[in-house]
Image (cartoon, rainbow over the protein chains, first blue to last red):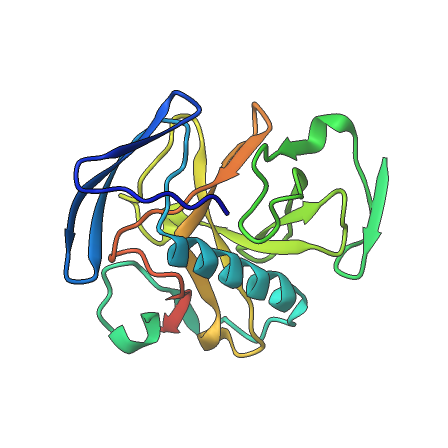
Length: 87
Length: 127
């Protein structure tokens, strides 16, 4: 991994079309500004990792035999029936 | 062309059936080609990897869960389903939808970084 030291307001340029700028540094938190072409996907790392995990679990569970759903209905987003279930 | 797996047995298809995912799917970034399969008598669609036929994802159309869900130009949103033998434990991923265009045979997955869209949304509730 390339490691660079940057101060407030200093930038890093990647590939001449991606600009990463240190906006502020306070109490163990750094605020970063990123300018990049629209087609470049920028994600918080932990969200990306979670998306990978959830998709892998879905793939592993794909052969589950479906039980009887005849007495159930499809849930709608906005239903507040059981908010804990959606965490 | 033919592939086979435990889920569907033998599947025969032509190049025109293949949906191209240029960036793959989260966790399966190396898989770029999928078949889009609709099974009868239930609400599920399936994405079946061409290169690794055992890799299968059940999907549901997100339109039936949330009509105002974000659209992408010409691509319809589908949620990856985590199945369970207990239907009340089945969940849909509304945070990382798969967008598909069956005409252009293109698909992609993206993350929607908003709290209102959970990774594990309960698909069924008691009637």
